[in-house]
Image (cartoon, rainbow, N blue to C red; front, side, top):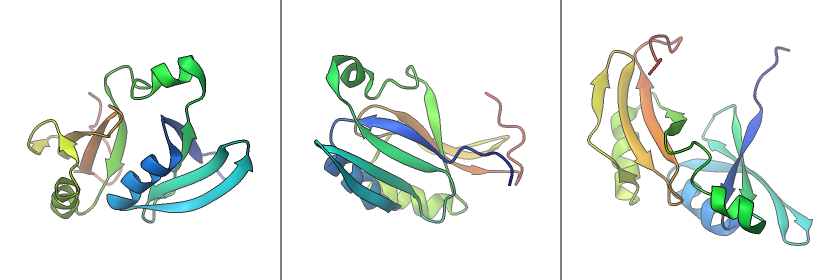
Length: 136
């Protein structure tokens, strides 16, 4: 098996709030295990997606200060879709804040959105199956 990124952690202030948000916009919960002492192992992913997000409740002032800032203010999360218009409409109906209207770029159709904690994401439908031409 080739190496791959299996999951990455996303700092959030509260497990339940974050889980509810992501389920509402179409993600699925792959695991929610109580680890004791207020800690949980919560894995989510876009439906059918391979790479998972581990929701990590921030502990302490350093982690709390990093909520929404893990990307340093730039888009750092990319939600790929093959049904851009449907997903865009669904997310809007669920109250997701988009920075601007969708646009067509050489690499595909894209709209920047912000999660409830300030992380900037691209909703993107790539023009090429191999994702080429996507360097910004």
